[in-house]
Length: 445
Length: 162
Image 1 (cartoon, rainbow over the protein chains, first blue to last red):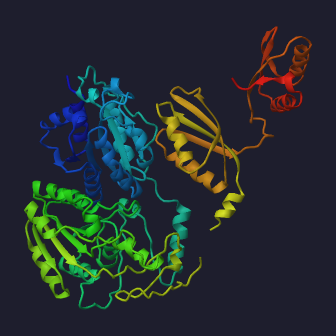
Image 2: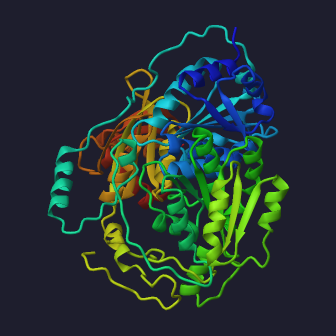
Image 3: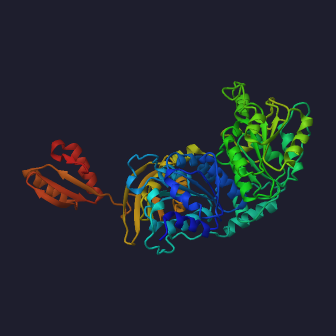
């Protein structure tokens, strides 16, 4: 006689799950109890469910295997939504397990009840409400298949409390419940030939490739030109370039969302697949730190750096608690410009510099914040302090916060205006704001 | 690239979707339309002859490009087995509308109505002294019936689909 919880954990184990990112609650209490009997499945207790989803996402992007996150019913489940939408936008394989009120309490506005299957219908690849224990094996099987095959994506499994707690009578597993087969089809031959011909004809080809290139194991090489370095104030680009040098461009980098994200993409010399973890599609601020946690859990010995801004970092900085609990040596780089730089840049260029609610008059002292968590921290105020700060920070064994007070006037170029076309981007010279030139890149529209 | 052009070429489509008969499938299919700001004009859903599968047939307005995108995305849904779509063509003999009308007519008028209904191939489901219940799948009858209702006033107090 096995409980639903036990069956679920056995199924997860069968699918090679070694880590779950989660947060407990009433509806999943039986599952958490059973978890103590599964030492081979490591549970990472985050400080907010959103971070559980982002961490599972970071884990999946870094490893290529599906990430698993777990939350209780109601608010636990709704807190996952941003993370699911983020994974859905970027086609990241994720299994989200949520607790639900007992089946007899469904649809009665019970305590901590939400229709999470309804809520996440449009931000998951597929989702399930497990109506009885008998359905569970088939659903889990199918969920992993849906999440990892074809175009990957997040799949949510909502399990009522009584299903998790109930005893199994006959675990006769039905087989192949769905007609959908794992699809890993070769490319369309004619389209492939067309692409090959276009590349062969091109004088200076630029390849813009989707994540499918990495998912299928075909990796592209990229290279970018260097720019002259500025003086006096810390230019954010300088920080990223030095970081790229000091880590031999081999670290796993997670970013948050904003200017620092663009600067990272432009200035860190990424060479390997699965080393840039970034919320590209949804643009979810607060993604960086939990994603770095996910990657570090997956690769304890690799260098994992979270590059963030002072805005994004404050959205999930509670996860510093998770860092210290598991002694995860994530290095956090905060490019502090005292503002929401990306929006500020738009306001500067499109709204005549009316900075409506994008400047933080005061921010937390990150050095003291680090101290509160018992994390080492370093700060650089001037350009000549950048390299020493990074060297010291990266040299530490445990987690570190490295803060760089960067030029708040610095802008990201090239920039595409909202709704604008890619051949009408604003080029502008880096280090020289706001006089920017609108360059029309030659080419057909 | 021509958003106007897209809007200009809107036309009605019939989409026929074979799905696994599981709870929530209809909601999933419907929300795929609504998420793209497409309105489903008419919809039927029922079991099909294959066990465990249902058939959802709906009509909607759209342009060819978006319709193609919707159909492709429908095919990506786990529970969807087959999708076919075609522009709605009223002259296609497979395009049928069905109507069930309750007519409050007595005496001579009832006899007239019966005659007309028979002439246009409608079926009389029930005949009572105070009214008729008529079923028709013939498009011509439906249009004639609607017109008659509008022009002849009281005589055709159709209690529309009940």
